[in-house]
Length: 191
Figure (cartoon, rainbow, N blue to C red):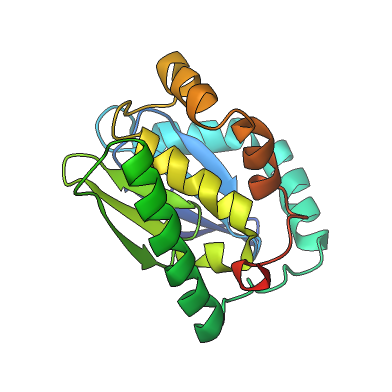
């Protein structure tokens, strides 16, 4: 019987996590640990164990593939100089685009973010940008600025958002592809 926390099944570490959610979910972590997420409200640990057992062959296969991968390179951190240059660039672009889009009173800040380039807190009229943008070229930083400012008008990524982005920055789709591609290189310091 599985319990919340650390378990071992056939010598394989299985971490069972109870949390809010709608689905029982299995993930294989980089260290080979199997994470089984079981929603608090509608699934029991027994149901989670049953689900895991039904997927066990897949789990073993996926775990073997994960463990066979070479270790991931640590993320590249922006230097203090690159961050300073990013702050100058963001000040310039933010001022330019808030005036162009008639969005006064919007503030911004920088912080480390793992998965996002920017976040718009539309009720606060504040945008948070990722420090990792310091490693990207100017046109990609500008895309993120326009993208986040557009969220002041449209709070999701639906058709209205896309139409507004088309009007504001016609080549935004290609910029988004470049920004999210692993091969995108260059930094704001180069410009």
